Image (cartoon, rainbow, N blue to C red; front, top):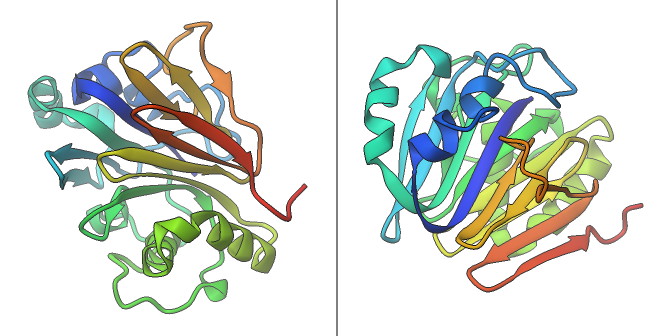
Length: 230
C-alpha cells in the first residue's frame, strides 16, 4: 500500500526521478492513478540512493508534498541507482521514519508495496520497525536476495491475502517482484525505471505481469514467472 520507484542507469537527480515528472512520486503521494488499495500515500516517504557502493537514505513520516527541505536539496542529489517510495501505512502499523521504505541491510535498499500478515513471518532481530514491511524486508535480507523469488512464493502461500511487490537495488542491479499489485517498466537509452505506475505518458512504458520476477543490470533486463504460480 504505497508507490515505489527504482532507477538504474546514468546518474539522475532525485528531483528528476521523484518530483519533476508529471505523475511522479510527488503527485502519487496525493493522487495516484493506478493504486488499487487506499486513496493516497501520506504516511511518509523515503529516498534511497548509492554514493559509490554505499547506500544512503532520507526518510520521513510526513507527506512528501509538505517537505520543502527535501524539495530544495533533491536537485543536488544524483545517483546511478535509486530506490524511493511514498507510503500508505497498513492499518494498525506505526507511522514513523523507521517504518518507511527503503529498508537496508547495509548493501541493499528495499521497498515493499503491499501488505502481509506478520504472523507468517519469522521473528527477525534486524527489522528496523515492527511494521509488516520492515519485518518482511528483514526476512528477505536474512534469506538472501538470491532467494527473493522463493521467499515471496513461500510468504504468499502462507498468507493468500498478501500483496508482495518488492523493489530492491544494490547499486549494480535492481530486483523486483509483482504479487498482487502493479509494476511498470520504462527502458530508455540511459537506463531503466521500474515503478508502481508510470510517472508520465511516455508510450514506451510496459506493464509487468503479476507473479513475475524482474532483474535489471547494466546490460540486460529479464522478466521471468515466479515458479510454482499461475
